[in-house]
Image 1 (cartoon, rainbow, N blue to C red):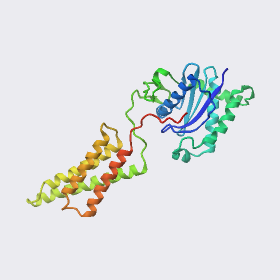
Image 2: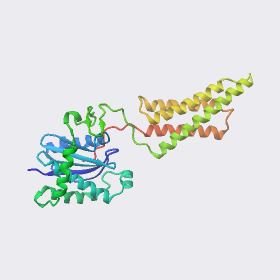
Image 3: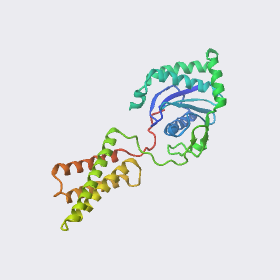
Image 4: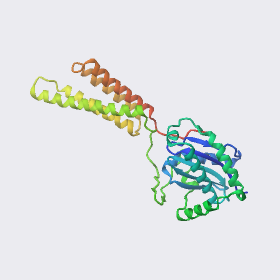
Length: 308
């Protein structure tokens, strides 16, 4: 029997489930499909806006729009046109009901769980095709799918269901290539992270300016200590390196950030005679704050198990 088994609404940016139906069976095949759901949720930002994954006796279809993806699981013989019409209805209702600000700022899984009521009603209609009264929409969708068919994701492309699979290179109309092995991505930037980045740049600029002033003073007075110039430029390099560590992932990233903070502290201790206490406090505090933000912004690992 052809039917829709489950559906969910997921945020594209980080795979956070916003709403989902919860009444599907718990067979072995369904448990495997749940793993594929999680893997796809993790890869949504790298995939085209309309895709199909065939997993044997089940198909997973999804569409993405405005930072939100609408996913559904159905039997392999369920018509593709009906599947995407179903997803299109979910998309239109969700966009009408919730604004983008709410979806972008959501932090808890299933914070729009009440949308499940609409998912259930719509699913019942599409599982009883005789009651459907959307022939015009079906015709439009059939034409659209012929002109722009969904990208077919194979199970081999997705890899093993362990949450760490990589997609192979593929082509899709209007979307370009899908990376075979994307670089390790960090978690989304937060407001405190942006503040720490800007303050680190500011400290680096201040050290650089003081360094050039120290060079001028050295040229004018032969008795000046050249080590002050080195301390200022080392402080500049340390601040800029903290900015680099905040933006990009590298090996031993946390250890490097602590060592860089240690260098900042040593430079400011050496420059004790040239700076007042407030200046020293500012530079050390910014260094500590940036180190904390580097520590908090970790690589995106395996998607959390939200029981989708």
